[in-house]
Structures are given as C-alpha cells and as structure tokens.
Length: 323
Image: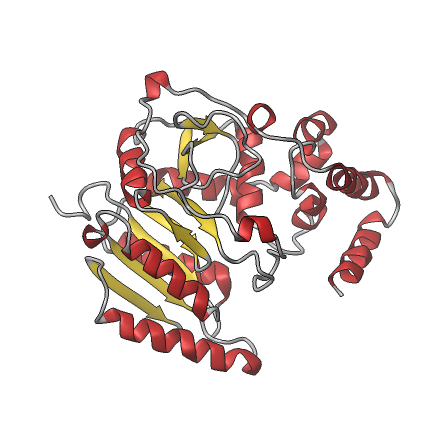
C-alpha cells in the first residue's frame, strides 16, 4: 500500500521570507524518525514589498537546493511568482496534496521545529482516531500553561497551529463551519459563553477584530468554533514541537523569550485508545491568563458590546499599540 493510499500524512509548510526559520524547520523534520517515508510540499510565496525581495530570494535559493538534497520520500516546492498571501498559499498546498491522493495532512508554518517522534505520533493518532467524528484534528504542541495531564494523550478544546494534523474529510467540515458562521461574533454576543472562556483566552481582546473581519486568525477562529460546536482535538501530553518565530519576526506573533527557548520533546508518545481517552477542556487543564491580559480581554469586550463607537476606539488603541 502506497503512502497516498494509507493515512500517512503529507507535510505542508508555508514560507515567506524567514530563511533561518525554514532552514531550522526542515532540518528538524529531517531528524525525525521515519522521515524517509513522508512527502513534503512547501509553498514559497513571493514578495509583496520590494524591501523583502532579497530575503525572499535567499529562501527560494535554499529550497531549490533542498529539492536534490533531502531525506524525504518526495520534496516538492510550489514557487509562487507573485505574492499570494498566507491563506491562498496554504489553499494551494491543500489542493496539490488532495490532487496527489493524500487523505491526511500535517500543517506547520516555517517557524516550527519538531522532536524525534513527531511524525510517528501524528501518523499513529490519525490512524487510531480516524473514525471518531467529534475529534477533528491532532496537535503536537502542548502549551506550558497546560500544567496537568502530562501522562497520556487527552482530548481538548484548544487549537494550536504549532504543528497540527487532520483528515481531509473532517477538515473540510471544519472549514465549512468556519466559512458559514462568524464564531468570534457568536462568542461576543453570548455573555455566558464569553465569560466561560475569557479567563483562559490569551487572545480574547482580538475577538472584536475577528468578528468585524479586520484580519483572519484561523487557529483562534477554529478554537472558538470548537467551543460552540463541541468538537475536540487530540493532544500530546508532551510538546513534540516548539516555535522559533516568537522573536518578533512574525506578522502578529510578538516576542516571548521563554517560549522562544523552549525545546521540542524527544519522548516517544503512545496514543491512548478512544475508549480510554479523557476529555479535559482548557478551563480544567490550564492556568488562567495573567490578570492584565484578563482585564484587557474584558475591556475589549465591553467597549465592543456596550460603548457607542467602541469598535472605532479599539481600532485606534490597536494602532497606537502597534506603533
């Protein structure tokens, strides 16, 4: 049976101009057990500003060389000649993967590094949970705020984009739900629902901007969707990935020195069977966010819901903060 006929996932990576990040990302995957059996497809976007062209060219040069010198089963680069943006870049990767016959995928951005058993865990989880309709994805990243339940895999309602996997049949359902409903708006209009998640929401202050379509953040939106639709994600008890983009180089990632120093675990993880798995929501497994962030979430909520021109004020505050 070929890897396209089985549930072995294809690895999808979107990249823009961060040479050091994509190099670290690919090299970490090449050190993972079983990498020689996996296909990888990388979407290399082009510059939207002439100021970025030099760094873009460095990334593209590196990827061209990797095509003939890598440890993967197949190494494919989609080299965009014009800037398409993150969303269209990823959609192009998904289309290429599905046209090639893949039924499952792993997606990560260029700033993620992985541990030795990352690929093995993802493939095992996808096979074991393929028939569980309420489990729509697998994530390998465990946030440090999730202090408990490190002994075995568990189900959660927290999404994280630092390396996740899914089945295309299930992921199409997720995408269709997100396209058909504005979950940030739904949460903001339901006081009880907002109150139940705000204490553990690191990005609660951004919900008004998502509700108004100012920008898109798929990991946040999918997390809100799971809250409303009662869907779940299978989680590793150890973080098999780490993020290297919390150095200020990302569009909205900011700087977090402690997470930047985090290393992915090289521990071998056994996937818990569906009949034995425990569902542990964020509200039970995680530390509350810092008080100042908690208050910022509530301030954003009240300005948006109850103050005339509150959204305009939030927009102004956001521009001041960014400047």
